[in-house]
Image (cartoon, rainbow, N blue to C red; front, side, top):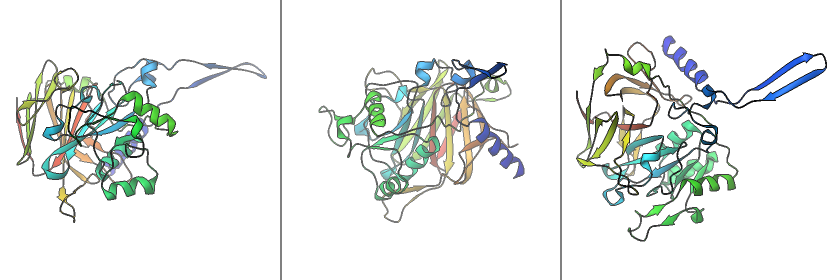
Length: 335
């Protein structure tokens, strides 16, 4: 337990917001020279992908968007341009996504759907605004009571549009430019906060077990899988390759995380409660390899991934697809 506390404190210190430094020199008494310089390369590292970014990209305003995943919503738009996509269950045993955008600025994102408390918890971990269309009563009350950075379409309709080629409610879309305009209009001040750790060399270790195929049976009505080809993981749903609606490109990511936890029906027998503040098993995949470990989080900290010795499990630089599923999910992994 002492070791775990130390690791948590270390990660919080390591992943605190990155800011530019001001260099102060005093060559003579009563003379002060202040030199504002461009950030060095280490200060331009994305907290979401671990990649080095140009300054004009690094200063993009980050945001999240809740994206539907029913059959009527596929293929979705914008997922391939997300830095991170979290996937977890919603009603009816079909997951939804909450995608984080920073590096890229997609012209079409969606379909946008309603918010739930667990999506809010994920957004709060990053301290950035999130786009949605309405939500559960509990979720909307949390937004109101905590004055969160909500980008609710119901109060901000001009920043969204409906695609007439699709039926409602599967046809609500937005874009990076519209959401960033909305964020500016609301005077929100998101931070560059992230709990992720990156280390490419970690995944060059030949002692790590190979894993090129991952299949997760989430519910009787939903199975997702990932195949490692061309140095990335291509996503499938119910055996079908997931593609982007705008250009038909396969949805592929550099890292895959599986976080297993308790997911139960709430008292209304409709919505679900997802335990994101405890601990449980996790699987991390990168560069065709796997590392098993545990995830840990309490109400005052961010999620960390650690191995059986209490050491952090890093990601390799690039995009991450993060699955949060019930502990009863069936997982098949092949070399």
